Amino acid sequence: MTLELVSFPLCPFVQRAVIALREKGVPFTVSYIDLDAPPEWFLEMSPLGKVPLLQVDGTVLFESAVINEFLDETHPPRMLPEAALQRARARAWIEFASGQIGRQYMMLTVATEAAFDEQRRASRRELVHLEAALGAGPLYAGEHFSLVDAAIAPWFMRLQLMEDAHALGMLDGMPKLAAWGQALCARESVRQSVPEHFDAQFRARFRRHEGWFGQFL
Image (cartoon, rainbow, N blue to C red; front, side, top):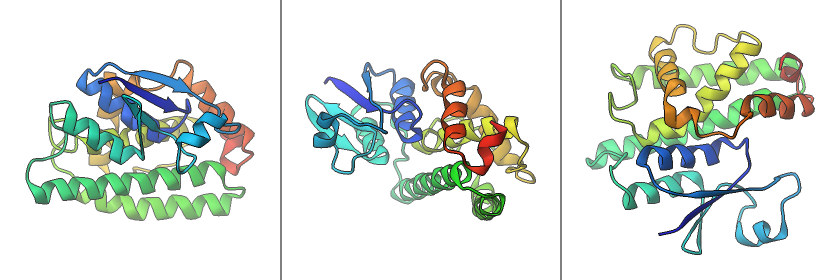
């Protein structure tokens, strides 16, 4: 089975697939594109005009959650629970993580401090529920790395960069989330899931967006 990811270097959703592939030790290749000027071949392949795409022996898969479930079903060890209820709950938190990534993007691009604070407050209200759902850690399922970890790790990595640039207190009063984020950001599969010079590219891109938060990056 030949696996090729089509990626944009800063995309958190692509990063989810890279993390899963690295955790499983699966060989793959990556082709990077510029989403601001996507090539025609990409637009012909991608139904939504988004990354990631995963080419599997020439067949194209899209949507990061679908890609990661495919990888989980075809490359052991499994990263979703065997029990149906726990598996459904994990899928729900993966969807939750997607929402947090969306809010984080809004925080990075909105034009005013008021709009930023609105997104920050909404994110914290939602994160309280995730804090309450976590166990003893260090990961979502204890010691076992799961697709929930792969789904939310890109959010934690970007949050760390944002907090370093301008203290937000996003996880104040949420010690389980804070510890989980530290564990994920220190994990080799997460650290190696982004291109070289990712931090600098991240700062440069969101400075160019001219959002309110860009002044701190």
